[in-house]
Length: 184
Image: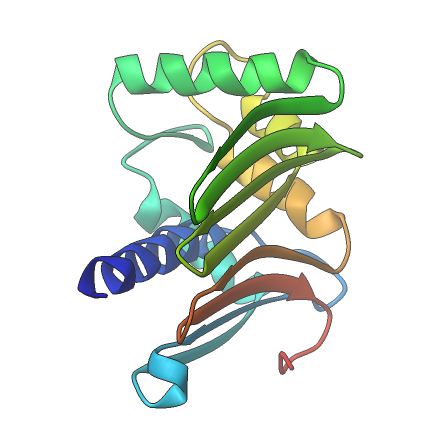
């Protein structure tokens, strides 16, 4: 139970860092994050952030900056991540990984312009849907670093959408983008 909560908190915090880096956009775009623990009896987080405010967070999150290009992690990790994202970007739609076991399953696919990651483990369900346009912009035209600002700017241009949902027996995490000040 504690391990599951740790995973949910880690996923929520990691995704928060990703989403908080969204740059400003015209049109009143908002990022909404909801975390509900222990069926509402535990800690609950409700975060509604306008894109124009979020732009100020990007430099604080970047470990190293070169003209708006953020470089995270070591060179080996960056090279592996870049190779995986490039291969996914360049591949046709299809299912890449499917693992099924007793009480658990995992699936990674590219479909309809989205990278889809679905995991179910002991009643906990994780659903991540990343637009490939985000991946394309993130990779940019350089061979090193990731253009985080361009990737996230593209994400903001793609319209209302859910990015991450995590549904556990008692814990839920939801991250989405829309044009409403208060996420519902």
